[in-house]
Image: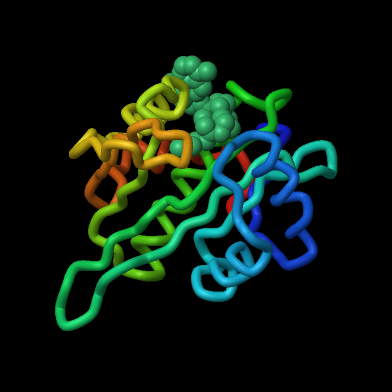
Length: 170
Ligand code: COA
């Protein structure tokens, strides 16, 4: 077992998650935005805990599903505190959120946006089977372009097995 565990976000975690978001990413959100995602999609808003502290989070939503359209998972934000990186925490958060979006919401694909310069994140998503499907010019407030990356769901057995016994499941 690893020294971290994953669990669902609870409202008491809000300020810790906001602190991590502000430290790690230029894309910041209002308290109500975090709470709205928690209320609507609690199964894919997860936190990683280590040393009794929240050290990472992922939050997602599921879009579509109206009038027979396909449901698509959307990873809105993921971050891990700098001292806790390169130990598989983001990998675990992604696997569990993708698993939940398929199991609970029947999402058939998942997509996300990532800065074209964010090598670490692009590498993580590629390893999880995401492919770049398009580039959006000037997507971010500072003018940087985004790649849209996407993969089908469910995850392959091999990916699910990669986290078996590694941490306590949410
Ligand atoms: N350079 C290259 N590849 C990297 C990487 C880096 N700095 N960080 C992660 N990866 C890739 C590797 O393939 C890694 O596997 P390996 O360690 O066996 O080589 C794989 O992703 C899994 O890494 P993991 O340890 O689970 O990632 P992490 O917990 O360190 O978190 C981020 C990765 C991207 C979430 C983290 O760096 C972060 O919080 N960055 C700032 C916020 C951010 O950019 N979020 C994404 C916005 S789209």
